[in-house]
Image (tube, rainbow, N blue to C red):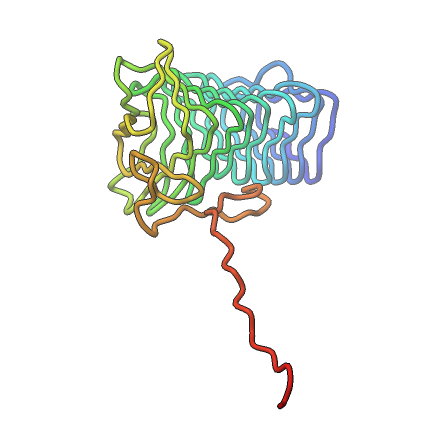
Length: 262
């Protein structure tokens, strides 16, 4: 067991035991991948500056995880609680039993497979610039809301998954035993491993309250707004720029001006 009361910054860090850091943990390279016995707690930020970050064991980070232009590989038996954001170019959640608990994930590409789960806390936001790729649709790999009445958003330019000959989506889940959980999906491009592409109106979300949204507004299968229900996530240090409905600016009504008393 090693306890550090301040920040740690090094060229290389190997965690195979128990490490408590009451500050920031920064390294150019986290090598000799963590094993399932690793126990890591970081009160500040966890940053990998020059290489991919590969995890295992039990990890809790209060101040955010950032791999910059590199990848984060949540693998083996990783159980991670990220109180703030998780940022990287590529994020891979790729082993049975992996659990990623977060309220914000930002990356260019997100890959998920096997029996892994991404748990989104209330007002959780997954912001994928390019493609979210799920390779175990309906058989374990899932994004699930976590907490009573929790609301979250998955935004991606493209969602790709292995279908079974029909456009049924099983990997987005809410829990009816946890109040009024709901998740909004902001994506208009769905691709499949067999090369088939389906239109938005053909998509069928199977698990709980999963709604299609554009600019935060709930839409029907044809892209038309269904009412006043919107999705809104505040912008802050742990949610980036947040996710806000596109509210049209109301024109200002000109006030009358007295030109002449006469």
